Image (tube, rainbow, N blue to C red; front, side, top):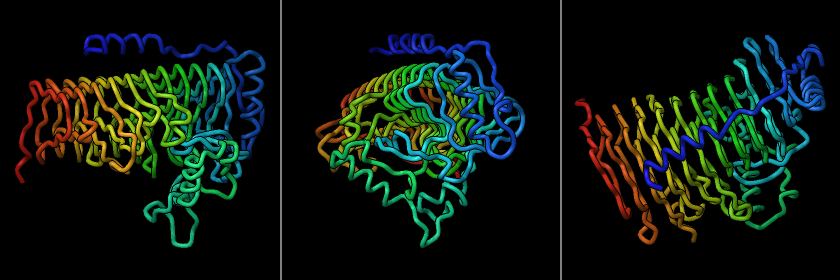
Length: 436
């Protein structure tokens, strides 16, 4: 599609991804329990709401300690002003293990803190807080890094992660890839899986074990006006994976990894499932910290297409990349039809536009991914390491990359473009670094 068609398509996407509607029935969680832990009260309130035909489960002001919360169809979990859902730091409170993905590979693992499987018309709304309770003392140290609390002699996730990758490569059935109790693969904060009509709106998310909002194989997903402050390991903000029709709007991301990362499965498991991520609109968001502002990959195996980004703000002294398309010939898949316009960049420590097929595993596989039709316009950048870094493969160059009508002030070093077929630069201004 050309640029005019692309933005018309983006407008149509915005208009068709509508929030689910719920009956005007309210169920206060406090009517289903009191004091101590609220796991049973959340379960009972959600079941009652669902059985009555749907509505809202209200969380009034206060702090509610709980284990996993599982949503059911036609239920809105409404976390009101002054309310905090404080998730338990005891891994046993997220058992039994559920069908999930860990880093884009299917398995059974600890339940995500808020989870739904195969449901329709579900929401997490309100202006309250979801507090994952993670930190150097809980969850984060599982990554095995001293900076996040791990000490020699403590267990960590490396062995489990290696085992899961071997299982996927060997074709072990998913129902036999069971982790959870006795293992150290961290759960996500919010994960709807195989759901339709999903809304996450207004809430504040802090201290997540890893990925915060991770819809998987969902359709019609709306994430808007959410603020996320969680600088832990692998703390991506929002990771739509193998989804269709996603709108992310008006959100603030101050996280420990990519702000938004669009994914489509990893390696052999991604090829087996074979579901792309497509039709994703990101608009009016503020990306402040850490790696990619809008990342595509590294888990691209099922393919990613039709991604639109507009009117966003990228920047801060600890934010690395702007548009960050990262994959390699081990991951494979494809990325096509990516459109970015009207972005304000205050400061990035690396590139405003990075498309790199040598990321991670590099060129050591037999599935070189085609990357094509990437169009960037209207970037206004105050400081970056360079304006762009573009690296394809000799036998699989990047194709049809356009950067136009953009200004990159105070650039630290020269741009890089290698193995690119069809690079168009039009009205691009690049200024020198500030003296000193």
